[in-house]
Length: 362
Image: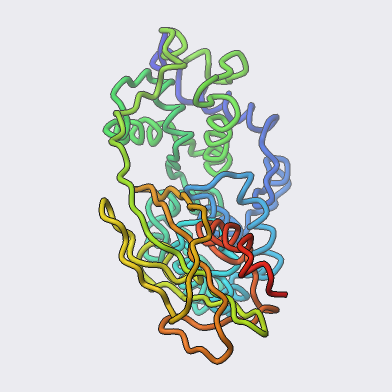
């Protein structure tokens, strides 16, 4: 059994009928019932959610989306914010280039009257909007017949067509299958239906084939391969790097020494603790940001980035009033927000605050 025995129109109709009955209620989504009443999605909210959802889960994005749209309900409001404000609110979502591009994109769109382009080609010209995000915005916000292919959709296509070639090599083939199935009728709902199917039914480890609207045409189910697909090429082990993080408070007023990272690179543009170079193999060279007696906090912070694992030693000190740091600047205690730091830096803070030299400062 395979999809060639069934018309594309039947596959689309069954998937859309399933979506009409089972669509996830998401704060950025206009559901099928609302769309049937003529409610149109807000391109700003679609764009914001799609950027946030890159490399992140729906559960995490919900609270960030709520905070952003409370602070900045329109793209013009986001454009008027400072980059530092946007970066602080983004803290914890990771991949910080997304936040810088988000802000840059908002400013361009605001200057154009607050309207996003309606085509994939036009959207791809904006900062931070690649082919996937452009297709998603064009389809969901503007009903353009674009194939929106994320990991969920790749999984559905691999199983529907029993594609045994492993990822990532199979990506072009899976994208072609998805493009061939795009619905000219309700393309925005169809794109979201495919995503929902992969997220809630055609799941990675335990596909619920008995509830799948496409099970009748699924080649992997017919051949008993549903749980095995998509296959993935063996991953190469990630290298390990080491470094030192320095946490200083100032005696008297309890100010914290923070440093903004360069605009490009890992954690680019974010505020955090001064750190040494991150090295492979050799012990990192000390790089304290000010002259002081530094104490080992006695614990290591471990964090995983896309391409490597990182282990940081944490050193702390209570700096004398009036001391001038070589790097960074002191932030008043009342203005310091640990939750505004990237997750790596929050881990460092959690270790440092337990040390007596830091905990004793009121």
